[in-house]
Amino acid sequence: MKIGIFGGSFNPPHNMHENIAKQLLEKKLVDKIIFVPTGNKYHKKELIDGEKRYQMLQIIAHKNKNYEVSDFELKNKLTYTYQTMKHFRKKYPKAELYFILGADNLSSIFTWKKYKYLFKHYHFLMIDRGSRKQDLIEQFQKYQNRITFVPIKENPLSSTQIRRQLENPNETLEIDHDVLKYIKNHQLYSKNVVQ
Image 1 (tube, rainbow, N blue to C red):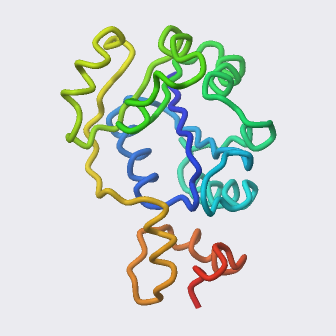
Image 2 (image 1 turned 180 degrees about the vertical axis):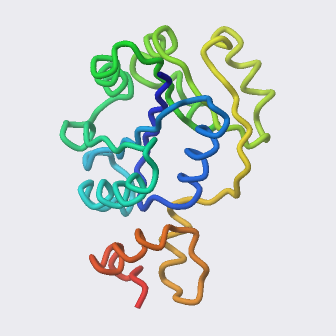
């Protein structure tokens, strides 16, 4: 079995996250996607409580049998990617594990703790928006057998944009209807709540 580990703040999860997961499954690059929301100690502006982000991801996961949500990073102190991947290696010893990331994250991976360990033991699915692929291929030539560049049809949507859109009730939100309902019911993102 091939399992894709999809980490992120998911603050909130939106259609682009789902689109990436769906396309990876459709392309048969993985058989299962595990969403892993970052812990509360991850210092990021406007990050809401992890339990709420976990619940929003659960709403999405319930709609696809190939999705799962893990609270591993939420239950632990500040967790490094190599620790997260070791956790899933222990949980799924016979699976091929893939870490899903974007170009920006890949280009900074040399600053990650134990990045050589990650390249030695795991595969990476780099979401290719086409803008930096050639540069990254050259930069990571040494690890080319560990990185798969995946062209994904997407718009450059971010959770930050979604939070801004929540301020305007007339905006068309690129977010799951039930996730939006959860946001409204729990009055998340304070002033960013749709009335």
